[in-house]
Structure formats: C-alpha cells, structure tokens
Image 1 (tube, rainbow, N blue to C red):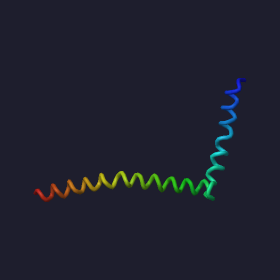
Image 2: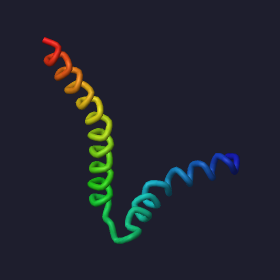
Image 3: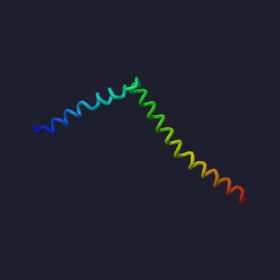
Image 4: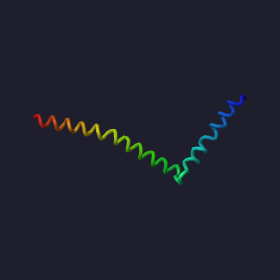
Amino acid sequence: MSQPFEITTEGAKVAPPAIVSMMHVGGMTPADWVTVLTLLYLALQIGLLVPRYIARFRRYWERRREH
C-alpha cells in the first residue's frame, strides 16, 4: 500500500476517539455538548422565525384597521 493511503486510513480510525476526547475539554461530557448545540440550534431557529411572525402580525393588524 502507498503511504498516503495508510495515513488516511489510520487518520480515519483515530478521528472518532480524538473528537470525543476533545469534547471533554472544559469538563463537558458529550451529552453536555449535545445539549449546548441543541439549545444553540433552537435559539437560531427562534431568531429566524420571530421577525417573520412579527411581520405577519403587522400585516394582519394593518388589514384589520383598513376595514
């Protein structure tokens, strides 16, 4: 086998444990990281939806005032 192929193969084998080890930085477990990332995703989704709903409510109230 060629050396670049071996390096790639061994790197792929090491990646999952290395990621888990890095996630323990700061004392956070993988479950804690999943929770943080889920909350971040939720906050981003809310941040994108709130302006849209505000605009819809404004249009609704403007149409009601016209009648």
